[in-house]
Length: 345
Image 1 (cartoon, helix red, strand yellow):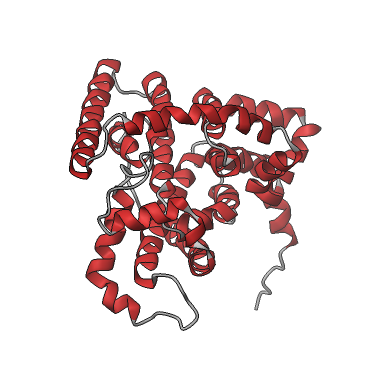
Image 2 (cartoon, rainbow, N blue to C red):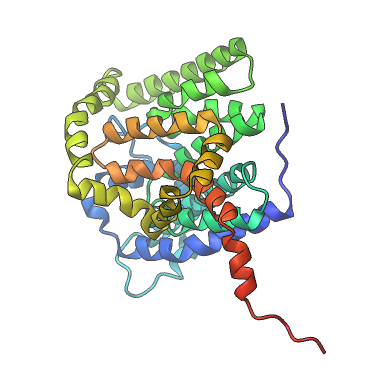
């Protein structure tokens, strides 16, 4: 069992990530049509204390509450910087951007730390991390009033916690996960099977976490005058999406959506077609629980008609694989050899 520590290099990666994603995130925030997104409308309303929202989304309160608090505290100051061209609720939208950008930068840092377990060259981990930071969905989750960022952080906490045997990180994920998204239930088996926490303790943690979440749900529904069972019916209703999702996934457009998540980075898989040693390296060095995580991603995809958005969850595994490919193909050495050398005096 290890204890996770952060150093100066982690701060550099965090700032590096924030610097890359903040610009595109702002553009998304400024130009996105909020009126056409039920998700955005729900979370904007939650941030204002309007709890009578969709039975699927109204319990995901952490990000909206933090963004709403920032807006109430600093909203008047933020409004002084409102661009003349913007039509959005600037101070509240920017508050969401701040929260989500920080969370997505933390997600990137955790994935970087996870990748370092699989490569010996940190620069390979940094380059592969760019596949995550330059993805259009990263800008989407960073710049819009959504809650995916917190769920992604929880996923990274689980994957890193298992690999590094960081039990504190895993316990934190157990308690935050259900508040981030109900789909955390599909991550629970990975924790139960592969974590270093004793099973009896895990069961206790999950039970206590569940009690806290359901007590909050019951209280919220009682205050709002909603039926407590309505949310369960809405959640189970996602299983009706499976047929539609399968059809989309195996259509030309569905395949394009999935491939577009990683963009041009998918070309890194080409060497795997002819390099048997590289395939052996990847299959031998990547842990079993990472491979089991991939079917969990597909479960998310099948239960949501937005398959590209859910396929984004596979990026932690892809970043690891990309880093191994980059390191073992000698790409970095070739780039270094082509760089101009400084002239001696």
